[in-house]
Length: 231
Image (cartoon, rainbow, N blue to C red; front, side, top):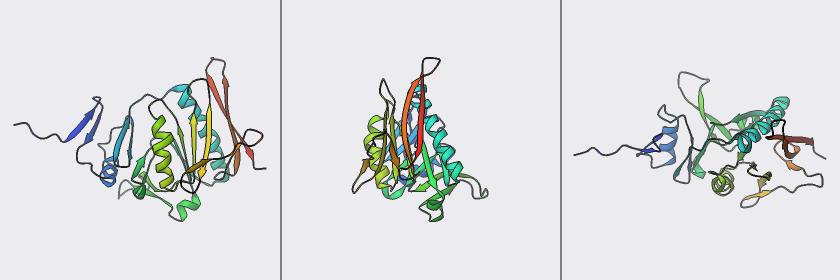
């Protein structure tokens, strides 16, 4: 008689243990060496979501790199906190969420008040951490074909429930470029109004931002995140 299955193999690449029945089960697996290195794996409201889609260079990667360049520079200049790009897991038990956003910012104020905490990977290594728990100040997601509904609906709802202060959404697919700064409303995120100069204000970074792109010498998109002081 064949033995019972102990895991699920997805597309011959991602193997998910069958014993995961809660967020805590998922987090233990995500912190283990058995977590696959490829793909983005999120836990959203009781469901494990796996995205194996290759990142599009000029609709996703280039846009993300430009935002990272400007925001990383801002954080470094002000020494205001920590920012992370890709493969950084943020979990929030009350929101039943564990995800790996494209970009994350944690202010030193949030770290000091334990609004966010680092989850240690190894007890014998005080500098080894693999997860953040709590409410980040800022999260940015770049929409792809495989993540549109997740980024714009499910994660927007969950990031709000997780207490995220500000959520940036970028959709650079096709011929249009959509850039939204979302801030906390009463029951959900609401979009910040665009001013007369075409800028949106970030309360987290205390700057105004305008995101554009143009064709580079190779014929492909080059992105520009313009940052201005508050009026």
